[in-house]
Amino acid sequence: MRVVVYPGTFDPVTLGHEDILKRAAQLFDQVLVGVAVAHHKQTRFTLDQRMAMVTTAMADVPRVRVLPFDGLIMDFCLKHSASAVIRGVRNLTDYDFEAQMAAMNRKLAPTIDTVILLPQPDLQCISSTLVREISKLGGDVSGMVSPAIAQALKGCVMALTITDECINCDVCEPECPNEAIYMGAEIYEIDPNKCTECVGHFDEPQCVALCPVACIPVHPNFIETRLQLLDKYERLTGKKAD
Image (cartoon, rainbow, N blue to C red; front, side, top):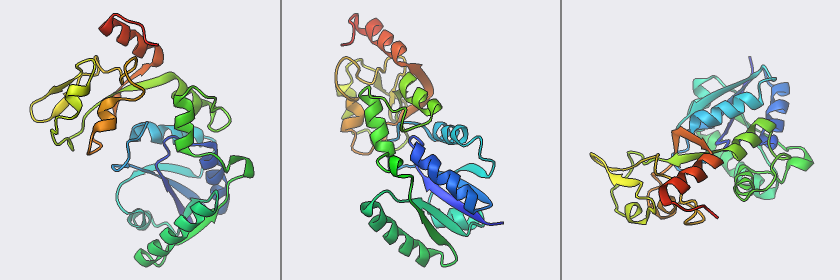
């Protein structure tokens, strides 16, 4: 059985990703979507949420399987007996980067090839980063992601949390406008019932913007609608958010 791996953060999965996945499923017997844990990134969605979104988007493609991965992608490929890695390339900048990565991966695992696919021309301008930014500013992303993903971007926000990587630098706590950050048993913690992601105060959460070690991701178990977030702000401050 020919197995290929398509790795990425998928934060969120876009129509460009879906296009690459569907075409890869026509070339290989099984496509493993390796959703990166992404310790180095401040992701909009948690690992479980990103995996669930890819699973939903590819529900009608039986050859696709979604798995988490952490570490070297070549180790993940060898573990699952994959013969190749699929990469989507939108432009020359992408190609230069992927060519370098392919050469390095070839050194790490000579038996695993890199297969480069170009998304459909009308999808080549789409990236997860642009989708997140456009959605955050209230733009329409319905032509960039599937309906379920568009709804997730539009309808849900999440409180923040602090991970074990916190170094107790004392930067975030004084900047929290709602006093949601406090010293826990060993590290700073965030009360999700008070966290409003600085709505009504700043354009972005100040703790996230100032944290030197990126230890403040979204809370995986505290999802609320935008309206609930605004209601919480009004309850805590007695004011309405602009």
